Image (tube, rainbow, N blue to C red; front, side, top):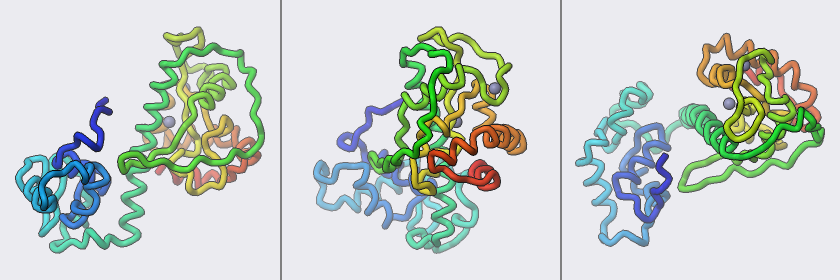
Length: 269
Ligand SMILES: [Zn+2]
Ligand SMILES: [Zn+2]
């Protein structure tokens, strides 16, 4: 993973790429002129006419393809572009309808949850902890939600690894979908390996008044069931969701997280 790129050393092309990545893989020149400074330090630029430089890079760098008048896209993501958008000849990318913007946000939410989940797993794997034999008790009290953070133009949903470790402990390091799922001993401790999964996805924090990052909302899953929750066929995911929901709904309610099964399922569509 390359975290070394900071605002200071990002090239024009890299910054353009970032704008596109956060705008559904494409951007108009106008958007590039405005958004590029989220990723590139304007005070470090030497030329007097950065807009000309942006235009030149987006036209010359093979990473970008002109798809419509004044609109460019990431060459290696062309197949992922929404057809409706690319087919509009004088696409009004700067005035996307609310609906289209919502749709884009939904898509990135889903990808973000996968990525943030993975980062949390890595953090836990690097932490030394011991099982307490399922001793953890739920607080039963709603927790103040944290605000969604933005760093270099990217939003993310903070997750506390200790809360997740508590949840794994509570489940005694077994898969909560099926306690007989096979597992193995962790490298850093004597407990079995399971992964935390937020039943109500963290990316939906805005829909709730209280924190989703609470033990009551975190399920301990074997790696197989966890991957199924993210990448499995919808019917399989629904089956797991339904079982976990029925076991957790009362606990969720106590911590201010009220949700119907149908609505929870929609989050996984
Ligand atoms: Zn997960
Ligand atoms: Zn399992």
